[in-house]
Length: 318
Ligand SMILES: C[S@@+](CC[C@H](N)C(=O)[O-])C[C@H]1O[C@@H](n2cnc3c(N)ncnc32)[C@H](O)[C@@H]1O
Image (cartoon, rainbow, N blue to C red):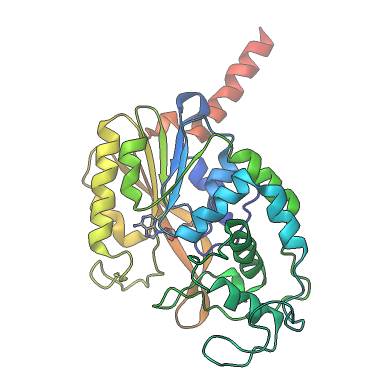
């Protein structure tokens, strides 16, 4: 198992095994696709993946980062090794060592790096590996490993409280580099997968969703970024994938059950474990989730592993 390189909101550390248990056995799967990649916890947990597999996210800088991890890991590690601690003084030899573009004083190294990252990456001095290193540095030293942009697309998360932040993570980068070989890295809307997947491929969707309270309804559960309309579109894409013979699994929040429970080809399961998420109000909370899948219950990874045990045991006794 490869560890994710980045921390990412919505990462599924605690329930990885429950989701994976709904996947079909590896021998039934051709390529693997993950259209809402984020930190890619499932991708890294379940590899290696067949050539032709793909990952995608709508976040351009994120997918550019993974291209650098796949194609240029040594340069990325070298750049990361050159960074100072987040609370150190700003580097006087680099831009923004005293104030940001808005004239606000910069007194910590972290905020200088954040300002550098927020230069729009379209000038002559744009460097893809440098931008990837800044993303990784900020991800590992910012508050809670969050990725959040303001309306102008600027990364605006404050410095985190780390006694010993480790922003280099060379072995994770090299492991991820190997896991990403022969994988197509896309950047756009999740529906790209209709052009990439084919029969017997496995597609795992993990769309963004916010915590919901017991009293939330479908209508109340809406975010500008990924509201009910997008959820319906996701359901349509899942149906199309099912029709082409692909295996589909979708993580979602409990109110989305109503989109799938009347479709014969899909089953909806509650995932018992709780996971920590950041809520808007008080920082951290716990939510239940559902997993929707078209993989028949008797052909899931967990079930087949269980049956394999008996086949092996029977064989041994003969
Ligand atoms: C819940 S996170 C995925 C977390 C991931 N499973 C992990 O292990 O870290 C959802 C991701 O969907 C991306 N996203 C939002 N809208 C999208 C869209 N329309 N198409 C593709 N990706 C989208 C976000 O940028 C975010 O990274």
